[in-house]
Length: 73
Image (cartoon, rainbow, N blue to C red; front, side, top):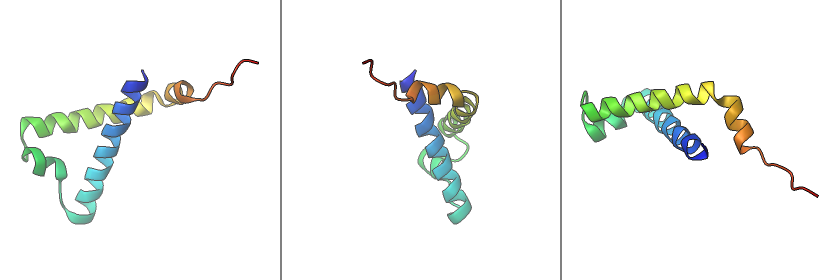
């Protein structure tokens, strides 16, 4: 599950950076890379959205999975 956590986090960061670029510079990096309105760009947008939803719904579980466990004495 940690691999999915990392992938979701990376996609959320990609989405955040893209929105930052759109807001600051009116530049959509995803559309520029894959073509505005292209199937690939749409897939990236959907994956970013699903990753964000996953992060929201799994917030506590993700924290629990990544929490350091004390060593047994």
